[in-house]
Amino acid sequence: MALYFGFNEQEEYVPPSELIEGLVSKNALTFMYAHPGSGKSIFAMGLAAALAGGEPLFEHSCTPSIVIVACGEDLLGMREKNAAIHCMKLLSDCPEVVIGVLGGEELSLTGDFASQTIKKITSAFEEAENHFISRTGMPVPPEMPRVLIIDTWSSLTPNIDENSFKETSAALDTLQRLQRAGVDSIFVTHHSGKNDLKGLRGHSGLAARADNIWKLRKQKDKVSVTVEKAKHHANAKRFVFGISTVDVKFHNDGSTKSLPYFSEMAASRMESSDAPYENRLLTNEVQRLQQMGVNVTRSILADALKEKPQFASYKNLKKYVDREVLKLISSGRLHENAGHLSYISTEN
Image (cartoon, rainbow, N blue to C red):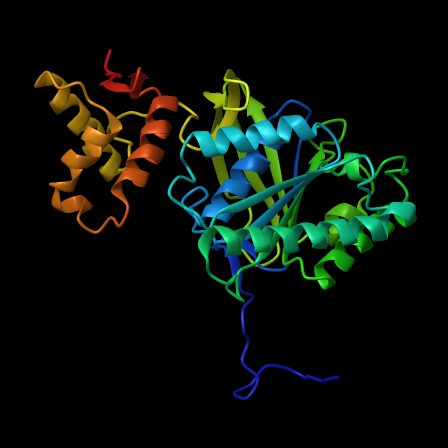
């Protein structure tokens, strides 16, 4: 036990470690809520992809993590979303990436199943870490966070009275027990109240105990994410993402299915003057090659960009091209057909 009276020269403040720089600290509890059908699960899997791959989320760098997504409903749907993420090559050439999807009716944060659920989730992380070792041939870095994403709060708190302080607190206590058992950060999707002024559905204890609260709101073909509460960061930040589709081929039976995936850049048609500088160079290069009569593929584009000094420092240019091409396709700046890329002008 230690006793502290204040900060001075000997007692310097040490800020908490960052999981998502400028957005979420390590060891934080974050609620992400919206009305049904707003893309919460797709956003949850996009978040999992960014954390597992150490890729930026809304231009905020993420710490590479072991990620488990626990879903109390629609296990198949979440597995398909995971397949879509991998298919869109966001995680290509990253053998260290591990996203596990855990499901089952017995998962519960309350009642007799709570202790069993803690054991199942901690065992899932151990299995995921063994999977990491087998894929990379390297030990898991000791500082690599364990991140749990729960989809949804209501599915893992079945039969509770959501307005009961006692029952809500019991479920929140289970999340604390999970953190004590070695889970570093927890994200939970949840539903909105009856209207936009109600915030998180259920007892006010949810908002009080949360370190961060993100509100999702769907408007036509885009979804906004607003930071309503941030314990260690600025409030009122706002981001936008879109929901696109990708055709995924399942090798076990040869079938192909069109599945949804998360796309940060799909909020609106991106005008060339608003596009990041590197992406303007990318689209310009596609246009230049097209005018030369070249059938542009991602591989040809990556080879062409190698010659440009702006991309000399990129360690994996092919991975960058794969990721950015998908963003530009979803934002309406590029089109891809049978592996060939073409530029789409947004000028009237």
